[in-house]
Each structure stands twice: as structure tokens, then as C-alpha cells.
Image (cartoon, rainbow over the protein chains, first blue to last red):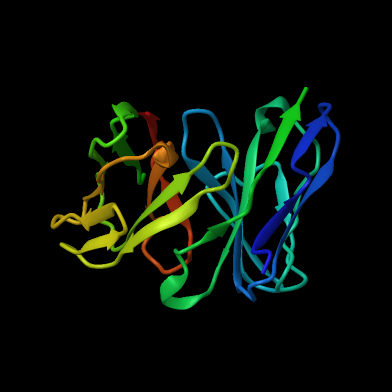
Length: 114
Length: 113
């Protein structure tokens, strides 16, 4: 199993540009989520999904969109990038039920917005 | 709102020493998790705790779920260079079983060979 994969690994955007961060998992996990990590801070939840067709907002959703058309994929869209969105983005997945908090993380996408 | 506070923020120790770190909250948690993040990588789950007072080991790591349910502790015995990284505590955000996690700010561990 590849686990949780994320692409790209690094990205530089100009203010106002849009892009999609890709996340995929091959563990048949129903639950998937996106976090951002800023220096000196823990991870903060952006959006999450408990299955295909179902998404919900986390702690810091503004400026980001998600959709979940398949169990495997959970892309994160930045509609109009801002310097405040410079961060490292992590995707995570887990099974539903008692193990929902035992989440597997991808390697991250390092995004810089100039 | 919910917040997790970790201490210390950073530690610089000699190889072979034992390490202790903790995580506290102003609200009660029913689950505590400890993750480790290696430089340039995503976090990896070390230990999950589900019951107040529970003590769980994973190799040289031991974690405890505090009796008050407002704190948790992680100990590493006989540290080695590969223990270097950031250690995060985490707990459920909100009251229902949504999978939403809240993280502490992390404890950065450096080990001198």
C-alpha cells in the first residue's frame, strides 16, 4: 500500500492564482481531512469528509474548497491564493468508528504564496 | 474554545537520557493521541489512549491518560538520535465522534549523540 499520497510536494503561487492540492489514499478509509501547519503551531483542521459526497468545515475553512467524489481522493482547492495561505498542508485519512482519530498523514505539500 | 498546551516547547538532551513531556487542556478529553513528526514528513501516530488512568507503551515510549482527563504525558526512555522530531499531543475537537482533531503546538526534541 502507498498509504496517503499528496501532490505536488512544493508549490509557489502568485497572489490571486488558483490551484488544487491532490490527496489520495489506497487504504479504503472513509474519513479524510486537510490540515495546515504554520511555524510554531500545531496542525489546524481546514475541511473533512466522512465519505464520498459528504464534506464539512473544520477550524479554518475560509479560502478553501473541497469535494469528495470517490472514497480514494480528496482534493483541496485554493480559489484565489493569498500570502496568509503560505503554509504546509497535510492530508489525513482513517476508518470510521472507534479508530476515527487514529489518522494516517501524507507527506505534505509546502505552499508559498508571493 | 478548546486548546491544548504542551510543555516544554523544546528539549535538547544527550543520547541515552530519558525524556518527559506533557499536554494539558482546560476542558475534558475522552481520547488522547500522541503523534511524532520527523523533519520534512507528516505526523505519525505513536500512541492512542481511550480511558482515564490508562498507561500504554510502544517500545521505549510510554504515554498516560491523566485521571482528571485534562492532561496526558509522554515518556521516552533511553533516547537515541532517531527520536529527534516534533511530538504533538492531540484530542477530539468538540463533543461528538466527528474525527476532528485539535493539536497542541508541539514539543521539539533534539538528541545529541
